[in-house]
Image 1 (tube, rainbow, N blue to C red):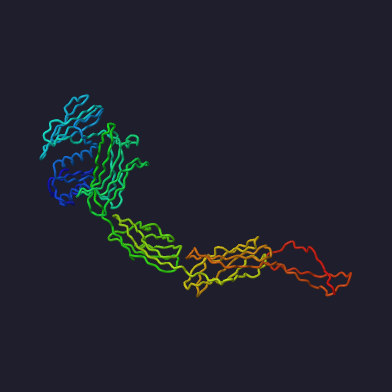
Image 2: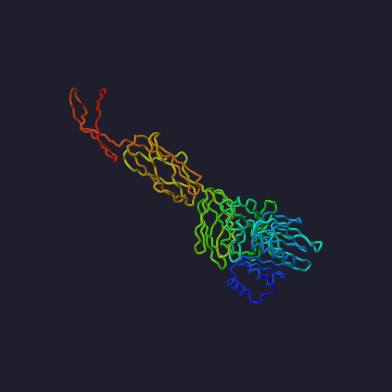
Length: 537
């Protein structure tokens, strides 16, 4: 499409008609079109929504180059800019185009064609351009030479071939728009005959460079050499799109194939795009602040964006996660997200969170500063040298309970948990468990610790341990207090009807009473021996 004047219809009518009638890519050229004029704006929009390209030119040679670039792109030609005036190809097949400025390209073919070549001449202001088209149905040796020079500036133009591997650029756009930030550009390498992807060994010397160009200034804003993806065999590069919504850019892929003769053949693929509008996200509060004892704490954040709902909200640290602090974010509900912070050590924390989200248009990440001061609690207050005494416990007495208060120096109620506390006499272990997983205690209202242990068939002895408590708020701190328990035999023996005096040789019967004080039966009990010892007097 070559524009030669201002549009007569409204831009909306043109776009509507374009969407209905044009199914492919639209390439347009505007000659001497004023910058930022209505003509430029509508032609740019027509190119972006069809994934085509718009070019504005001022000079005649630029017009020729623009046409050749479009022809090259839609017909999948590759071009070579010869430095010499004579150029030779061997066993060339397919179509070849040659261009000369203020001169005539002379063509020698072996074997010769049976029909004359197609030649096109354009007389432009200040110079003459001639193009020759060479259609080849069979492998043919070609020699190109520049003759008939009309001026001192006469020179050979580009030579185009259609038999070399071609690269097809893929750009993911939304109605011709791309998001700001990093944009992944891809290109697949295909056969010029079948259009099917080629394996790496079939195009070992194919390279590509992706450029982001400011359409107005023609300045290259970002440029990256493509790398081959071994999984997809595609060429890929991550380019940077400026954060300037509405800005018109040219995405250009310049790929190069080196022939066995050492000639480099380029192919330019260009696509005009616009930078998407960005959705601005705001937060209340604008900064998170908290000061208090170390422990889990919550912060609620209200997120909003003008005119569009937010989705897929994610929270992460702006930089590396601070040591000793983690964060868990709840799903977005009623435009609010709740952040729960889990500190593992006291101290000052200062930095920022990065909030990301999705919406109709790309959402600009939000930086949310935070400043936290977490103070270490004073902790438990066990008297020095004190040992807790469970008291005497009978063996085989079953589950027994022991309760004591957990003293602390902190006025604020804090949680603690028992992490060690099994009793032992060095050989036998009695498992001890706290009834509650966590004990809440404060200086004004000390919490009770209830210990449970099962006393079975144990040797009578003293069992001891060091009860170890850990702060839930400050897991790195631990407190220990000794605990002991005396386990005694459960059997009580009493005698009845035993006289005060016995005569020599006299047989006396008496009753021995055995009492089991425990909760467990004592089966098969026998008296192994009975001994009477005489005492003087």
